[in-house]
Length: 311
Image (cartoon, rainbow, N blue to C red; front, side, top):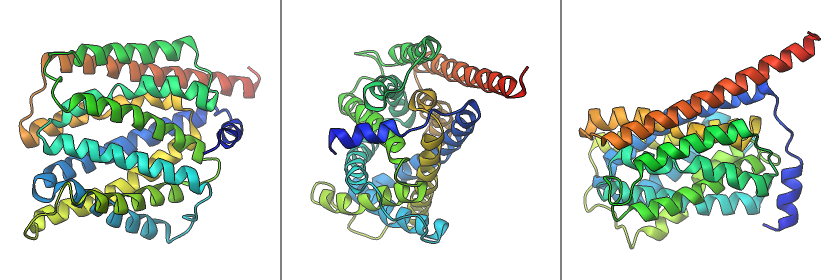
């Protein structure tokens, strides 16, 4: 994408009101609940089907789900170049995460590494989107990152062979989140979600030589998990697209921490994954950071209402 196109798209993004930011926050929280369920489903299915088949399933079922949910409306691509670039980059992120899970990384540990994304999103949104970040939001983001440092210590429980690859994937994920907001100028949630899902089909096919399919047909439980995985991804990414259309990247970034809590509970219940005390302590810090950011948005919304009422 040319720099001029990027600047023009960023310039056309309206500054969200407090009410829009609150709606965006609740939408993205809903998206993270759904996407965490999808991650649990694919992590459970991965040992049976592998990385490539999981990606193809996500693409086929997810794109079909978007078509059904939207009745085919609004899926025409606006910014084709950026949709393509975002799809390819996001597929690389997906493949890295699935590889880490099939290699034995715990769900909550991978989410702890992903908690580095909010700081990257906040930093990158400044040059790419021209967002202005006040000291309070910087404080909440840096507090969350301090929690990440508590969790992510070299030679600690989270530091294993897959960790550096996931850190690179986290940076790429931050870019795709920002591009989601840029795309909200030209494309609706249906198009953004549909073309992302569709991109997983050719990318999954390209990965088949490295991650061959299973020799036998998976059982009904695994097939059901893959179906849920695809549908949940379709719903989650439509919610993501709408959230980033409503709120700034820096307002939504701290909620990248939210899967930590749910993922930790589900990982313990399903796989008996017990996080280290540093992971638990760091998670508490990042959750506090997210709650503080929500509180600041609520105060801004109240101030806007007082201004409108002339109080």
